[in-house]
Image 1: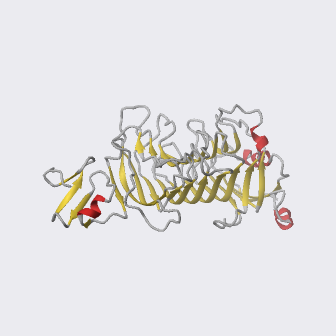
Image 2: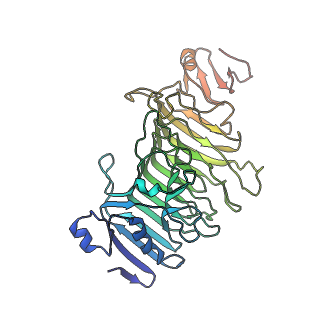
Image 3: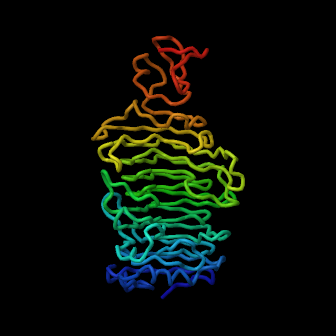
Length: 403
């Protein structure tokens, strides 16, 4: 029985077709294993538009099969599941994910879900309303995996475009078949971030893997903090501002990544649009801080089987921030490399970027083994002076080139 704790608070337990007998007996709703997205949508639809209502939905361990993408209500993307507009929503698996061992709640998109779709159409597995002016704050999504059958379809696994404050924890977005030489189709996205002015209410993403997408994490919006994300076997691990803004969207508030990683990807971060759409010439200068960011380069294992492309700004000089990174190019990840280029030439000049493996001072020979970043400083003990990299060469404080 669905539990109405108060007139404004509801708790619902859902079980999968292959959940345990005990979980099925305790559930308010049991999915059949066929078009489970429709069953779950019927539960969610009862809350849509009830902006004073709170709902907590708990999913029992098991597989929830997704067999179709649908146009629900005001959505402009076809989606398997559309979350309602309401005061607060909690949607989570009952059991925590055990990293690298198993996922207890899986939303499995089956191949037949794509039948009849235009291959150029971008669809979603989970979507919050993408209609202008509607958004849901106080969202918490935890403890589940979305599994796609391949890397060939334009799918956004989790689209947060119209959310406000949201907490995401312990999630996996996984496209089967990712790996060396497999370039995911452009338009496939693990998670797309918000794109609204939330008046200071931020988002917090923690412990999320995104594997086998063109963009593992497509980040935008404001006041977003990401901790422990991993973009893996994707074309881009991270992009910023790489989707359309809305007229009243804000794109200047900080985005912070802490201890996040990208492994076996084809390109370092892309920084696209910044600033408000109503003033396209506004540079925005949105701040992105990447703290202890980790990168693993394997040109013989990434999707393009070529050297990893450096990070770049589509319009150089429109973003700013601080980036501290470590990178390795060794097959067994035995050490960090000093000869890694982070930025494409001309990009990143408003960032303070540092390779953690670079010493702050040392010999000329050590300095010359580095690939430096723009305005990097180094005290050269052989020369007995501080030198600066100006984007073309090392120079002293007077601008004179030094070897």
